[in-house]
Image (cartoon, rainbow, N blue to C red):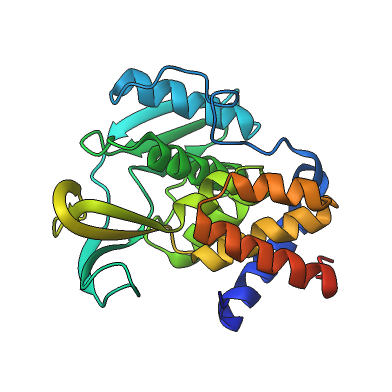
Length: 266
């Protein structure tokens, strides 16, 4: 795994800014949210009730339990394209690129948030959970700005910097395992339409990259958090076991490198 220097610099700069604004306590001490029934005990249903329960739980984990959440049907902004083969996996694959998932933060004001939900794309609750984690992180980082900007601030959901800050914020708040796993997924027997919607198709292969931060970038951020929390080898192995194989490999590599060359977080 290789993390591009430009992306690494962007992530480090934004993480330092976040720590300067909000302190290191949450980054070091917040519960690490795991993708299991202990943290997500609600019975899932791909409808408004399921979305409501999952969103409110995630916003509560983000420290935004008092936020009044409203939901609006909104089509996901994504696209699919062809790409070259992944070594040893397929002769050709279809890729959904820069997909921030079926949920997005539409507006935020002090004490309230409006979330856009693609109700036609709720086939995978883990994808929804990850996009809600990024939305909650965006609300955590940007909602205070509404107090001195507009009464109701509309975030630039298509702006790369905004989406990067949401991804960094998700790790800061303890959602790093969930959002790191979402950064890259390989699907067998699946295909994507031109609008990015996933359909079953025997013999086809599909890659999806979630959000604007790469798999390597998200694994790096999670490794930085592990070093800051002084995880021992047993805890690093436990966290790696909760990651998909490619993410676990990148996390292990970055953890080793950061222990050898610690990162100055300011």
